[in-house]
Length: 254
Image (tube, rainbow, N blue to C red; front, side, top):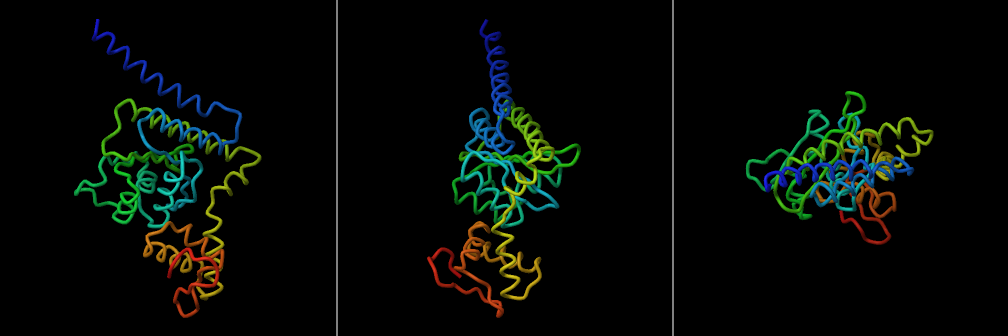
C-alpha cells in the first residue's frame, strides 16, 4: 500500500509540474508577458530561487526576454559583461549546462561570472538551450541560493520549460509586433553608450564596446549600469583613452 501511494505521489508531483508550467503560458497576454510568467512558474514548481529567459545571437547575449525578478535579470547581465557563463555555453553546445555547486574547486569554467554571482548569494546555476527549429537562439537560466542539483522531476520540468520558451520566441518572430518585442530586449543603453564612446574617443564600434565591457569588468558591475552612466553623461572615455567622471549625480566611479 505505501509503495503504491509513493508511486502515485511521484506521478502526481510530475503532473503538477507539467500542468503548472504549461498553464503559465496559456494566456492571452503578449509573448513578453508570458515569458515572465513562465519564469515565475519555474520558481514555483522547480524548486529554484530565480529564472530568466535570454536571447542569444552570434554567441552574444542580446538581452532578457523574461525573468522572475531583478537578480535573475542581473545574472544575464553578468554573462553579457564578462562574455562567459552557463547560458552562452548551453547555446554553444546545444545542451543543458548544470552546475549544482559553484563553489566546487573543480568548477573553473567561468571565473569572473562565478565570482559575481557568488557575491549575490547564488550557489547553483542551470542553463537549458532554447531553440527555434534545430538552432539554439536563447537559454533558460535557473539559479538557486543553496547548492544542490535538480531533482529528476525538476530537471524534466526544466526541459519542458525550455520547450515552452521556444514557443515564446516563435510567437515574437511571427507576431505583427515582433519588431517591438525584439527591440524591447535589446540593450539599447549599451548601443547608445557605444556610439557615444565612438564619438568621444574616435574608436570603432567593436573597440568602443570592448572598452565599455572592460571597464564594467574592472568595476565589477553589470555593463548596463556603466552604459547608463555614459548615456546620462556622468562618465565618458576621453580621446586620451582615460575614463573621466563628468558633472552630475555620482553613480559609477572611474
